[in-house]
Length: 413
Picture 1: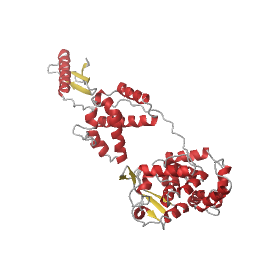
Picture 2 (picture 1 turned 120 degrees about the vertical axis):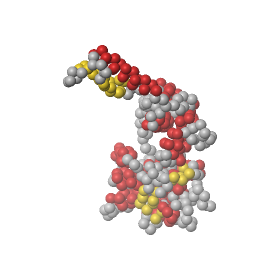
Picture 3 (picture 1 turned 30 degrees about the horizontal axis):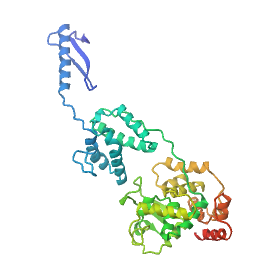
Picture 4 (picture 1 turned 90 degrees about the vertical axis):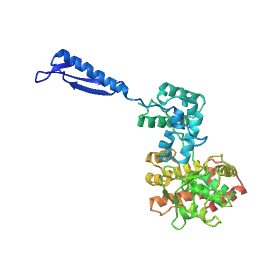
């Protein structure tokens, strides 16, 4: 025992006691009778008092994963657990994020962990979940999304000291898939083919391909609040997902300059400029299914593979990078939170550099402003001819039809 005499010659004790929870407490004192034996006895008694006091502290009741996440009084579609109310709602998760968390909980987390207490979920249980997800042949990105929700759920429990520590989750290393944008000529063919669906669809394709808007942002765009035909700008204030209007991804409002092609497409819409820009004839919102089905029809008319709307956003960013856009300007136009996201397009453009068609270069002759030069080149993509498409190896028509399509492509802009 660490019992010794002090400078005055009296017996004292001084030591450190480790409690069951790992906490360490320093104790010291002097015995009533100044002897070594009584000092040792006093030390033992002090240690017992500290340990007994620690045992008397009531332990926190640890809830089950289901109670913590979903709640005991929750409805079939509305959770009420502490994690949901304090973390998901308290941090203002967007409706799309809420729906994703609900789906992940019902499908993957509740069956595995619902009946377990939070402190019973360890590395072994998490490894079993990861193994099951891999065996179910889910994509690596999907698996990481599920593990991320689990991590947030346990991490918040640790922050408010319901559990001592968070077990190591360990996300999978995912290689980002390479971007597959439309080529210059393919984009021109899409704009021409969009006329078969009506002028609103031409404008919608231009909003994605000429300004980089996401599909939810296109469907939520309003004439009065968001479109400035005089100043030539688009203000992205909101987006819609599954009928629910919310803030844009990243919760950041942004202003995007229009190209001449986009400006002309919007001005060509024959409608009262009130309400939504991209909508049905009666003014009602275009659903996700309608939007994707319409784009697929346009792809078929253009004799191109059926692809998602987001490819047009990739098309805008990669082509702007090929034209030498300032990455910081592109970041602002795209609404990226981090410059690293923007540099993905810049790096792709550098790795797939190819000659720019003369129709595009001619359109910006004499333009000195860097951003305006890029916008002019983006707008000129709509004038790429069928001859250019043939030079790039794209399958196109021949004979009289070839000449007719070449003229039509020039007239799009």
